Image 1 (cartoon, rainbow, N blue to C red):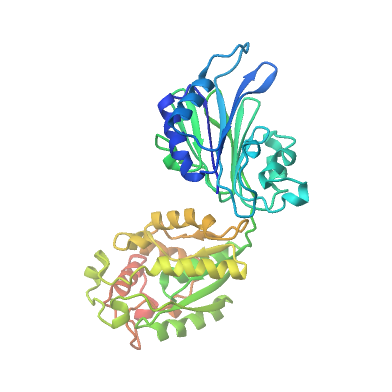
Image 2 (image 1 turned 180 degrees about the horizontal axis):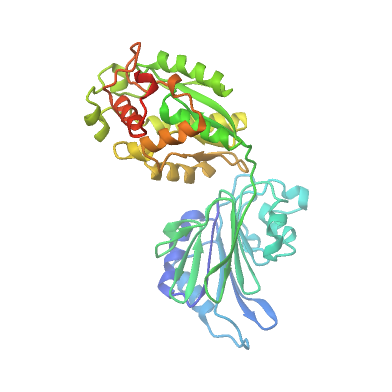
Length: 433
């Protein structure tokens, strides 16, 4: 789709050239640029530039003309909006007269209900009518009238307003100025991303964000927990239940040694906690020692480093859990990643969960919010046992061992960790009695 961009303040000309050169990657079917001046009588359109191709000479010409001194009394520093057009197959071929900006607004995305709003040749043309009142206080009301995808930018008085659902906007404060664009490559300095489903209001005098407004999405108060039946994941289920979240346990079958033991324990846990169970089969792409029975039986060694590793397990599980959650109306997915095991397993590190959460708005349908919860990410094993004991977690029903014996082996890494965690709490692990 299109690329949007802009800047305000005394931005270096080389920065502008960088932006305009790289901007063509987001649209090669034409460009439009408007510059504005904020004067004592209000915001005024200053210059308009539109064309089908922006070569080096034209870039220099545009930048020079934008930067020319005007005769506005009390005018502020330059304020610019622009768009590089990528013509969708559903719309007419590009005509210069039809290029954005439209009445001081630029848009990247698709507005699916433009014909319900009015008769427009290009869907983005409906935006100035939808945003007839551009005060930031009206932005959620205006956005609620749109069906589709959007990254939108416009000036209101001496403020820049940026709003997006899953379409990207990046921004950067530069010396004496501010820049924004659809991709980080378009910006010449390190940038920040506008969070998905967020509106920002930026003061054009200071470059500071004065308002950050979350765009509402549908998020049911239901969580599906990736649950092996072990100590960590079962504790997570009871923690969320204690927060009045409706919990379902998802168990992934992928051929691990202890699969039947885990399933048997899970059934008892679900009965105890009044949880529903979802059984999900994993694709046959993973390998690891806990699948072939060659796991390490030295608890200390296995705990200190991830000798027993299953390839991309948490990434695959959470991805499948996301699909299941969206299809079945869950607002949350959760797993038992914890601080203890983050020392050996990268997909238990809190940062893994944080980065997965950043991905989720771009992996689900527009307007759907699914959030990953990793409530044990800052806790060690003995602390997890403390929390679970206070919540009445039935640890006697859990199964953590990599093996499939009648009892926990007591020697593999998870056995060693849970046994020691209970000892630190001054009690004996009920599955080791």
